[in-house]
Length: 442
Image (cartoon, rainbow, N blue to C red):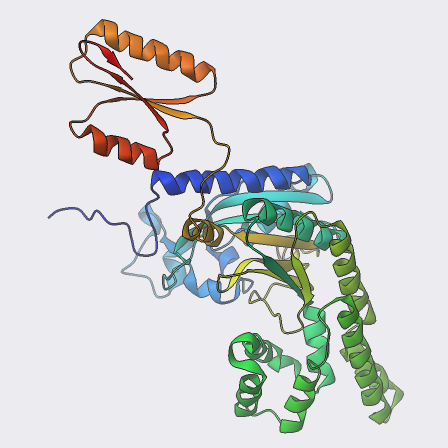
């Protein structure tokens, strides 16, 4: 039986032309992030299964490629549960491995630590355009800094990188805070155990509209008055820093109204505590104002109180980048202050931003992007059967060209020389030099 020549579903072979773009994008991202003081690290692609299934990765935990135990440890016939035959898995993102890495090496690292990590991750999901089972993530994270500086630096660095890679594509950064989401839900009377389901529905706002969200919440059994009060909070809010403060004022007024209805002082204190803290809105507004003042790239920065982000490990600020002409986000991240504590027992401030590398490459390929300012590429083609003297001449001339910075390919000439040159031209070769048995032709 013949072996299968196509790659596994959801994974792909990369041809040289695309590889040039991938290398260019990766180098641009690395160079930009290093300019912002991020240090590159690397973590293994295989993680302990306990770490990957610790209820921090949301739906991604359903998509883990799990690895069976090896040798004498593997007893499939006698196993009663999956845990008896599985002990490891391929990482589904870079954040969980980074948290383990930092917990293991914190004493050897500066504080705060600005980490840059780029590598493949794996998810057993349904493949579609721009989404694969194996794909590259490009992450920057700041660990040990609980101030707004972390968010500001992450947004500035990520937008600077995107601005260099896609200067002709306009993009928008949407920003919110999980505290805003919780505060709005609390002030409208939703039970805390209903928050996640509520947020999942809210996250569909851009796809199913306000009416669609309302219908779905009512169908879930929530009281009409509660739902209508909740959705009313989103109306008339501007998308700038002023809109953040306006939302804070609305919730503060609602909290006061709630507290006034309570009978006891204890209940009043409880009602006030359940709403969003004023500091959350001030921090969010401050981040937006500072980013706009210091941005290197051109982009829109908008406050979006419907932004949720799917990962359950987010604890505070969240952000997402959308690019014109491409459905879905091309980058996203947020603050996850509780994850490292699951390894160490001590909470550590942490915030990160991830660029969707595969999506950026897809956009560039669709736009016919060519890598700028690459080294000159020449091809030296020699006829089959050239003598040693001519072949030595080919090698000497190629070596001399390489010393000047030219990229030189030495290859035997094919019978269909025209087609060979066409294929090499697609890979960026612009000059050809031909060597024959009898004479040199240019």
